[in-house]
Every structure is written in C-alpha cells, then in structure tokens.
Length: 421
Image (tube, rainbow, N blue to C red):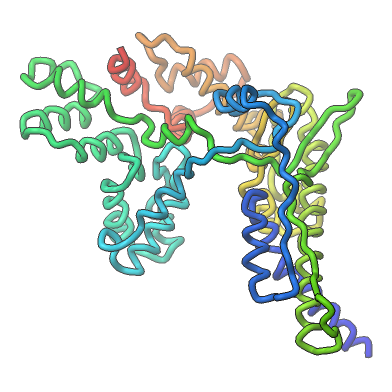
C-alpha cells in the first residue's frame, strides 16, 4: 500500500514538473503564449491574459526609451511595435539561402548566440561541438549571414561586420578594393591616404552600422520585469509582477466529471495551475535570496560575487533549475532594470569582494571617457584597474572583458574616432 502511494505521489510530482519547466523557463512576455500552447489539447482550459498596466504617460515612455536603466517608480513594460532582432533573423532562415534542414538548424543555433550588438562572439569550435556539427559546416552557414538584414549581423568582429556590409554596396572595382583594404588594415589607415579612391571609400565606410544591430538598440523591444525590488521606510521588499501573470480557468460548462477523459483533462489543468504557482514561488525565493546576497547593490553599492550554486544550495534546487529560472528574466529596482543573470558574477582579488561585473562596468566607463586622440591601451587599463581596486589583472583578461563588451582595441578605436569626425 505504501509503495503504491509513493509511486502515485512521484507520478503527480513528475507530471507537475514536466509542466513546470517550460513555464519556469518562459519569460513573462511569452508566458501566456507558453500556456496557450500547453492548453491546446485541453478543451476545458482557458488561459486569461493578465491586467496590463498602461498608466505611464507617453512622455515618460519616451524618457525610458532613451535610457534603458533609468530610475523609475514603476516600470511594467516598454511597448513597441518593432520586431526584435531575433524575430527578424528567424524569419530570414528560409530556402533557397538555407535550403536543407541541417543548414536551418545551424542557422537557428547561431542566432541564439548572437549578442544584442549583432555579433557572433563565441568560441566557434566549442559551439560546433555543442550542436554536434563540424566547424566547417558552421562557418559555411554563418558566412551566409552576409545576405541577411541587418547588414553585418553574424560577424565575429568589427572588421568582418564592415566586410559583410561592404558586400551589399554596388561599387566599382577600384573603390571596392580601396574600401576593403582600409577595413582589413584599420591600424594603418594612413598609408592608404594617397589612393585615388581613399576619400570616397571613407565616405562609404562611414555609412556602415556599428555595431550592426544598433537600430535595434535605439528602439528597445518589450522589457517586462518579473520582479520588483522596492524600498519602503528603509526596508527592501520583493514583489512579483502579478499584473502581467496570466490566469488559468477550468471551464466545464456543465459536462459530467465522471468520465475518465474529463477527469484526465481536469488533472492536467490542475497540474498547469500548480506549475504556474510553483514558478511564482521559485522566482519569489530567488528574489528574496538576491536581496540577501546583493543588499549592498540595492542600496547603492556594487554587485558582489555570486554563483548559481549559492542559490541552488540554499533553495534546494539543481543548478540547471536555477539557470532556467533566471533565463530571460528581469528585475526592476530603483537603480533601473537588470537581467537576473547579471547578479551572478565571479570574484576577483584576494578579498573576494570585487566582482568581475564591477570591473567590466568600470572598464567600459573608463573607455567611454577616454581621450579620443589618445585611446587607452589594454596595458594602461590594467594599471588603472590596479590603482582603483588594488587588483592586478592580466592584459589578456582586460582584452577579454573589452571584447565581451564589443569594444574595439585602442588602435581600432583611434581609427573609428577619426571616421566620426
């Protein structure tokens, strides 16, 4: 008897978990769509949209568009009719450019790894191994992105992005070769000044998008926080964005519940409801732990080092579950809107109190405010970081952080600054 009850309990839990994982992983903007898909086979389930808050004025929306992390009292959503970069790319993965199922599979996988700037900045060998394809096949498919919009997307760096964009221009041979030579040798741009087509080539290059997805950064797509961290009377409180949570109604319409088919569908519907509540409970627990671990940040300090395993252990969940829970989720606090994943950073320095996120942000600010006539080398940035934080980073580490932020080298920035003049 006990064994039978144990099996039944385990079966119920497994059924709820099967429903829970897709619901947990979905971002709040696509949560209703996920539930709708799950409810297709259940005629007794109706998924009801949440009550969207639309009290923000047009003026405040415009201010938010110009400053993604602006401090606001309440940000329920940023609405725009513009498609996201990923939606635009997905629609272009069709024959005849991507003819086979294999090429389409690789292309979709590449799109998943393209960063918000439009670059494919991953280790290609590791990526190919993860999707079970050869590096040659991946590169063959990726090079086809030269024909996609926005131009330059899918390139690995600035040079390749500009070459992708150059391909789209109908230029005479002399002008094309001059522009290509300049792009491939930005560090020595001066030596091309005597070329007949130099000035014309520079005018062409100035038209290129840098980064290639810049148009999709200027008009932010919909961002809806799952969690609000608010301060009331000096105390931090956690609140889920209930306004956007869909509801699940079971509508029987007088149908007799004694039929096995009806019983099974009601059971499935209740599993969906349990899964939705489990999502809320899990995100609430994660938010409470973030407040505990990152209290200094929410009160004006820096993000502290933190690992996924820290939360997984405290919450009694597997590492992969926490990873799913924070994927594509955002948190709103008085300092702005942040991806949940941005709170998980590596410790640097002997004291273990400085996070790599803090260092990365500092490096971006230093470069943003540098003398454009004398851009800072990575070695110089190493010295500045050491003076500020007392941490000795390697030059390669600074280079890696700079490249992750899609910031060109000092020599490349010098050329780019010149193109802006």
